[in-house]
Length: 117
Length: 167
Image 1 (cartoon, rainbow over the protein chains, first blue to last red):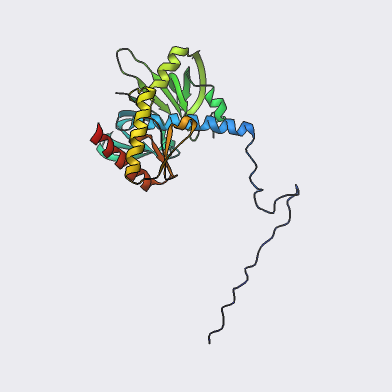
Image 2 (tube, each protein chain N blue to C red):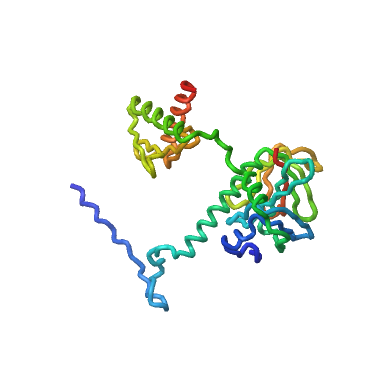
């Protein structure tokens, strides 16, 4: 007969209360957002929605990119990631030739421009 | 993070529909009408209307913004013009009676296909499928919303087929 497996007790680290008398290293329970926060969140959503529509409109359009150190390149806009930390482009014209696809690093890009159809 | 990136969404919103000149790092400059400011990257989207050409859109990445100077306030006409640039495609305008008819036809068809459907929302304009998917007027595949991708794609396919058959 096999002995029943005893559950191994897990040590729990319990921190002392912080100097302001609350929190043992945990975030306090979420409060309802203050009215100001809700306003800001609505504004954030409106702005973001427009930005995403702008990116969607840029897709497939011929664009010109101004990068750091005076570099300027032309390419077809593909997509951007969530924080615009990387931009996907296609048909990137470089002095070395045409790159079918490339990722431009967001921090390297200063601005880009594209015409709407 | 630069000063521009530290602003709040409500502050960024105050720049909408204004003609601005953006001083970009490395001595660049960008001028145009503010369409939006991305709250995630603080990137500014500007529109310009060159003569005899279609609208040109410029995006200045948030990290590259040095200063934003407001040159002019946009009037109602400009605001209207700017809001149309990225507006979702205008659907054919349906009259209230047409919408009601479309809704009832779709509802009947779904019911005969044993799909649980109810009406909800103010004045019952929204259809609700199985409690997980909603269909807004004018009741096409693009007006379906759901958090379940599989159900969404199935129902969109059904509606697409239904509309093609009955159009």
